[in-house]
Length: 284
Image (cartoon, rainbow, N blue to C red; front, side, top):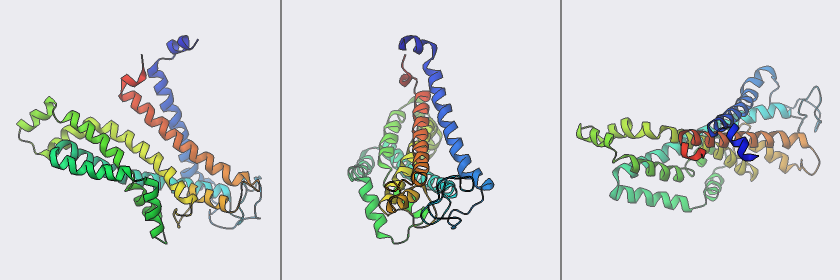
């Protein structure tokens, strides 16, 4: 039966379906976080109702232990988590791509030194580094948290980009550019980067997913952002005030489910894109 289904649904169609499903989830969450506040204008940090009120017509997702509207917090938390995820991923990607390109293209001593640095950072537990750096700062805004996550999450990107660069730098089109007298920078920008652009985009998607989960992990131990609202610090306060034990499901399930949906959809998107750009992964 599985074989007959696989004949009906081709690998290419299955990949497109996965991409469509991930985009649908992402667009839904984006709409809730960015369009929702224009319709539901309740301030996320204001006390608007009775404490710990369950969902009702007046409060669609109830209120927390301080009387704040959970739906308003959820929408603000989506924006905050996406902001941190996007910024941290950009920082990680920039470091990883620069290190990987330099190591792969230059080779020899530059490669050895940069890969030694990469291995050192890779061997250290990234969550431990994040905790140590975050604990040093008393006040942590979203940008600082993004930088903390970004500077500890780049090594695997550097190794992957180095590998891609090593396989490209001896290709015929690169040798032709060298013969034409182009500089190393011109060759990297014109010949190397366009050929790994799809991989870089997939790496960014994966980094963004990992960054949002990392922010939640830091928030759950009290080392997340001290300004603004994220899905992580909503869950932190729900944990501190024992929302699970006291059955206040509307306080912790919506942000938790939203975070899982975001991370899962980004991972599914990265997988689908990898299969699309790598036909070997689709299977026969």
